[in-house]
Image (cartoon, rainbow, N blue to C red; front, side, top):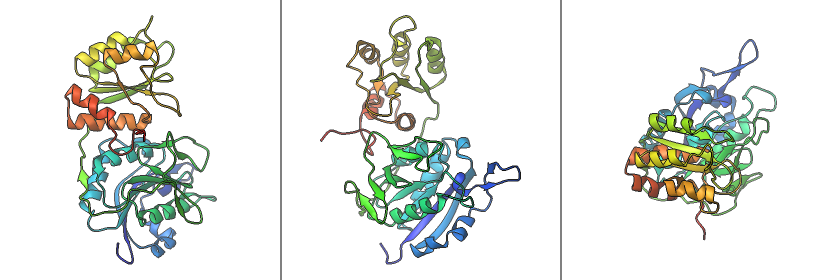
Length: 334
């Protein structure tokens, strides 16, 4: 890295860039450059350039924005020492997962951040999060991470867990990669920078649905989804259990699998993993052709299935790729 690092700030909108309008609600601000003007401390950390690729509330983010962000970063990979992406918190974890799959073999860091409180409001966390993100973007790290509050989180392990707390996004089913206090403290050695050639894989199948199973969930809902989508993520109970009697989902899963429509099953729980072979109600789904998401988050399960279907439609290959860990999205026993 050069003595004075060059960082590209890629903006997409979100609370971190929003202003309060006349009636008090938050709306996107047209002045992305204001981030740099209102946080002059950033320039002490390096030379900061800004690239706006979107300016929307993250509730309005669509999957086609993810390849646009990935391409913008990939095209400028040789020009900067690190990248920071600002994003609204509501769908930030989907975007961080998407960038993790689309930008592999990274030689330098891509850091995603946002804020719970706008920059101009009292008590804002925007200033701290953005400064922390730039600090991490200058560190010896080479993967997609989320920096929020005190945590440095792998891009596929981030989850918005609170609409109230300032530490709104946390690392789930995995210890944070690091923590930010008086200095950056790594909980395990991060993947270091290196002379790698970044691999861009921006292809997605957007016609993937995700739905939670609940008592009384009707099989015809799943049947409709299977007829109108190329893949489905089901949020199962506990260890990935699904109804097998009465309103059984097993026949629909079997039919979908026979038609080449993958049905991935993740868990509704925040802690733990699918262990579908443990109970009959999970094993029956496996035998019908369901694919276990193991300990992937719901956000990562959805995005990964989109990404996998963007590479192949072969059922055996889809099953194999969903079970393989590419960027730390699945815990691999040591």
